[in-house]
Structures are given as structure tokens and as C-alpha cells.
Length: 281
Image (tube, rainbow, N blue to C red):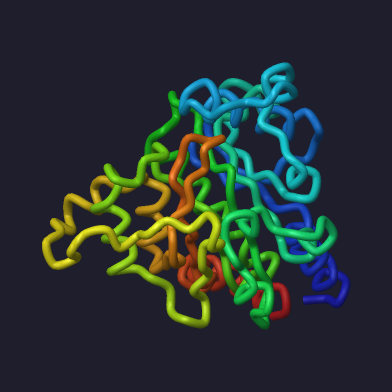
């Protein structure tokens, strides 16, 4: 291959690392939002799911705008699932996930998770961090296809940006931990993060997770009772932090989740490495 063609191939890979190529599955595609209108559509979807459907409590600005917006949105990338049968732009947004890298958090001065957890173990970790959150899918699309695309998008993003650890806050419904005792105990007993990654809930917000005798739990029933997103993290070999946090605004009980990136992105690493080798042959 000529030097010119090699450089063209490598430039294409560089563009994809920066711009994130769309992945398709039928009419659905997943990519990073690239316009203000698409980011606005993600915030509108978040409002519909979190506030209108799940009972989150809006402040005056949120209610007036009918958008879920906070300080982190400006610094984050917004992963979108788009139904091209509706539109290839903002009107087709049917799923979203907010992705915030460590350097973006440094510009803002904090990660979202730091309002609930002491994440100093992560911020001192010698590697690149990615905080994920604000995940939601339109009710009509809550099937396997949309969630698979979101996971594929995250895995590709992790490869392209050389992420080492993915983390964030994941939610169980409701603010009363008692009905969630079996699930919280199961998570703590079976999936607690190793000490090097074990973030802890802030003392003033910490709720006990070990609430039952773990030996008496029906593990299959506990796993079935977990939200699909948390089950997805666990299937990837993910961990939870120490302590649950009640989020009264969003009407949820939160747990910290962590995944070492190679567990999620292994097959995608192989895919892109093969393309790079082909470019150099």
C-alpha cells in the first residue's frame, strides 16, 4: 500500500475516534449527538421518561422548559439511539446515554457521581475514566435492539477514547430501601467492588445495602428484580460500590456501578486493531 493510502486510512480512523461513526441495526442507529437540536432532543426525552413517567420532581426551570438539563450536559458527549424511519436527526431520537470523560470533568470541576459518592479512589486511579448516566429509552423502544445498540455504542466509545474504567450511578425505583432490601443485599454480597475500586457513599447520604441474611436470599429472584441496566452491568462483570443513596428528586435509590473497560470492549478492540493492521499492510 502506498504511503498516501496509509495516511488516508489512518486519517479515517482518527476521524472516527473524534467523530464516532454511527452503528446501525435495522432502522435504528447509535452515534454521538452532533448538533444543539439533537442534544435538546435528548434532554426532552429525559424529561418525558424521568419526570412524566418515573415521577421525578422538577424545579421551576425544568417544568417550564420541559427539559432535563444540568451543568454536566455542556461538558459531556450525548450518545443517541435514532430511529431513521422517523428521522435521521433530532426528531428520531428514541434513546440516550450521557458520557463524561475525565478531562471534561476536570474542566467543570467535578463528576456527577461525586454528589453521592466519594470517588477519590477513581480520580486517583492511573487511567482514563468515563462516567455514564442519564440513560433512558422511549417507552415504545424498550426492547433488546435499542439497549444492544447503546451497549455497542459505549463499547466503541471506550475503545476510541482509550477508557480504562467506566462508572456511574444506577437507579432502582423508589426512595424506600425496605422493599429493595433483597436486591440491595444481593448486590452487596455478590458484586461488591474490590478495595482498589470500592467507592463509598458519602457518610451523610449513605444507606445500608446489607439488609438481609445473604444466605437466605433467592438469588434468581433478586437478579430478576433488578432494573435491566444494572443487570447489564453485572453481565459484563461489573461491580457496585459500598452504600446506597436515596435521590428524592428523581424518586430513586442509587447504587454506584463500575466496569473495567476491557470487559465491555474486548471484541471492539479486536475489530479496530484489525482495521489498523489492514491499513498498514
